[in-house]
Image (cartoon, helix red, strand yellow):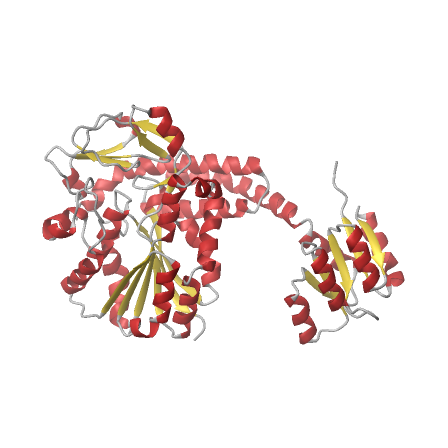
Length: 520
């Protein structure tokens, strides 16, 4: 049975509004009335209305005074202010009191009806339209999946899927979201096939149809801008997916316009040790190990494997012939973020400022290890919501404000993404096998070749190896590696956690954003 919508309309000339009230009741709404603020407040104490229309200009308690008292009693009720005046101070006061909408007298029935639909039926209307639109788009995306032949094709598919994923976040149609989830899984399966067929060819110098990879980021995007600009700030959010960029983008747009939204491809493995070292060195991991053996550690070594990023970046700039004063800082918590803000004037004396934010990476790891975080980020929409909440309450927002006020060119990117895993794949290895759940490096690996992407000769992917017979295997889509011993325990422990290192659109297709200040 459809729930009846209860509306309270308060106006000192309520008798003159009977035609409007009859019109709404004819549409199925139940309308209560009050002719003054005090009566409206008493009615609100007795009943929880779905929407309140409130006249601003009333004898006795004014509309704004009535509004404040109603909000104290029932803060969640949407209130639509109706006023004869268009004076800016009245509008500001009403909006500042968090009204849902405002209308200027004289109002007609259709204006009233539209306001109701915007504030009460909005979610239902959004759900209906989003569902209908995605149904129309479903076939188009499916056709793209069968014809995609280049990395650019996959970037287009992924961006379209992300658009609908975020649209369906606002929909209450769980059935349609499940249909979308299945289509996205299909896309990741096909993307995995594309990577298996093409990844190794990208290291052939004669192949031209290949994406920008991690070691090329500085050379292609940063260095040309560094030659043109007085100052550049690069913000790298570790482990940030494209959808997480999308949800923080509107907040950044308060201060910066997105001038360019470039896409690049993370190298394999999609892990910090490999991908981020590659970005800062401008080299593939095998070259780092060969040229700078003191900077590279084997997977099994229990050390900080990204300890020398600043030194590798300095060496990259020297190789390219760039003389630039560099400031580099990793930021692990709010205290460190606050310190950067305090010292920003001094930091900006440098030509290139690189700040690495680790919160999102820590969030993905906490999702595995901390039960409360696993509950809070139990779905992709919840994971995005936690990211947005962190961003809004971090010092990063204030940093954007300060940088924009100084007209500083800002780049925003990440080193790799992450995926919520749900399907275990069995693997056997010895004690020297790497521990990552999305890839394995070792010499005695036993697995089903049809379930993985195997690189039997790491030198073909410019990857280091610890022994002559070492090889890499990578999981596809939402798979994760589990050893047969204690299989059920580890399946239960790791299912629905966020992992990275393997092959998926979420881990490999990444944003590289150029931002232009909108304040100056």
